[in-house]
Length: 433
Image (cartoon, rainbow, N blue to C red; front, side, top):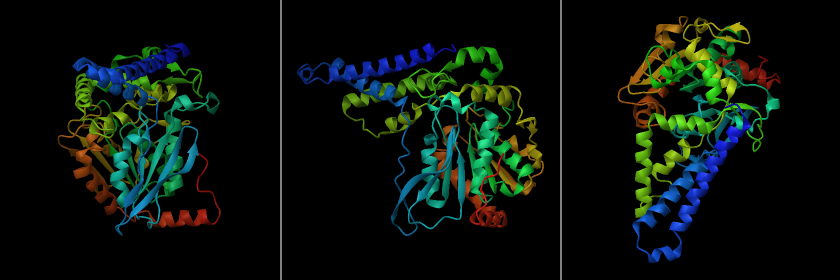
């Protein structure tokens, strides 16, 4: 499978389906067809519209779509998305609210690199923005990164997080969602040992696989069944000539999407059948619930092959984080070195991707953190998506996370003032790793 031809074949299939949808929509919507009151032609036009939109979204990075936020003064304040740190494989982004005094709460959202763009956390950002300064990791699509930029595996990912935390200062409150939870924990431990004045104030881990063996899911079962050799042969391809990253080994986003859909194929099939019926009746809208969800869900990005393979091998198979045996550039990271960071885990009782217990496994690993600085929470009835972006997040989890941040506010105020004083004096904000 590791050939450019197979990558280009997938892109050709996507383009063909998009073209078929556009053709069906044009044919079924042709004015002369209106003279023929045939439901099949109406269905054809609706099917074409939904199909064209769906396949077009698979290669487009969604916009953040966050234009303003209401301030305490009752006015709408314009939001601008600014890059604070730029790196080849991902940037540190700040949602700057114009004309609003800087909020005391400062939050870094660590977005997953698991097939979707950071915009998957749009609703999470929206919900936190009125009450905090929000920063996020904006990972890049591997197909657009030239081979000359080198590799990017889980150790490089961890170093990126270390750099981003250092850039933001010790009064930052880190929230890691899903996939990056183990590596964010490792990055925090790295700072705790080698640069303690740069470690974050609080760390909230949401639905992350700290110890995948605690509770089995389809994801963990797949990791056990497939060997690394089989995985490399089945999942890895080379980027085709159409993109800047031509020749780079990746786990293609389209292949990842096929896996996502297959896990709940019946649900997705029903959703698209219902949407076609709504389009036929004229009840569908540009930004209706279906389009709002699937415009984001279908927008996928490639992962570098080495990131995907090392994640499966080291996080899921070898359980290096769970065993406290993770190394970065030859240095063994000891999670027990974390002593001055308040840690909270959040899980959903119906999470079928990261089952309850997998994320909470972080708490006993943090042997150096006092019990009063550790907290675990399980949202009853919540699935994976709901614990960071759904009703459960809005109604219960978000208030609890903000309360947790406030309870530990000011713990690193002295270090933050010291760090900012050095930066203003002309010294670099980032240290070499």
